[in-house]
Image (cartoon, rainbow, N blue to C red; front, side):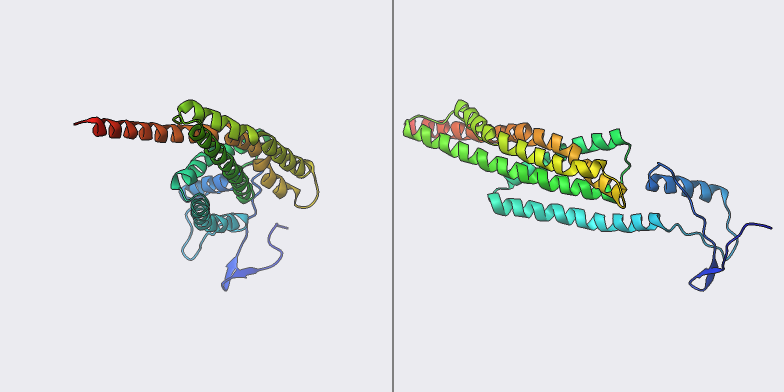
Length: 257
């Protein structure tokens, strides 16, 4: 008695034998890459034989091909929507440029939980990027409103707008967003914790979608409350200095005989 397949299988009219592999806790992509290198080095296939890697690995490759197209297209659409909202590429690039910082917490939590990169994890990071971009947009709106009020106050007081006014405006705008952002983060984390600690069918996939968002919301809070106002201040300070220098040159030129 010998072990063997219980039926003859065929693919494209060719007899086929399947070898099932359990990769354990290792991520699928790196495992298959390592096995492919070992097989190519040690195995010589006879004429007429072919070797194909299929199953979950094939699905992973298809998902990666779609993500290579979908992710850049999505980022471009987000950038376009941000420009249409602010009418400023600088503000749009402030949000897009600082957005990767919001994903640091998600990467840390994945490392702590021992999760490998997968399509589910990618979906979680995409959802996290959307929430972080939304928080950045609202923060910029509040900063613009506070800056406008400070400029109007300086105009009423018949004095120039200074860097101290700029700092005060940014502090006022950022402080107005502390409570709403903390409430948003608390609500999102509270809604995702049952998924993180739940069980049942599909729980493994759902945990890998929720993990980047749970960890990333902490870093997204730091991004919205500290990083975005700081970058906004550097941009507005440079613009204020350029306007001041331009006004001084115009005054000198006007005073010359």
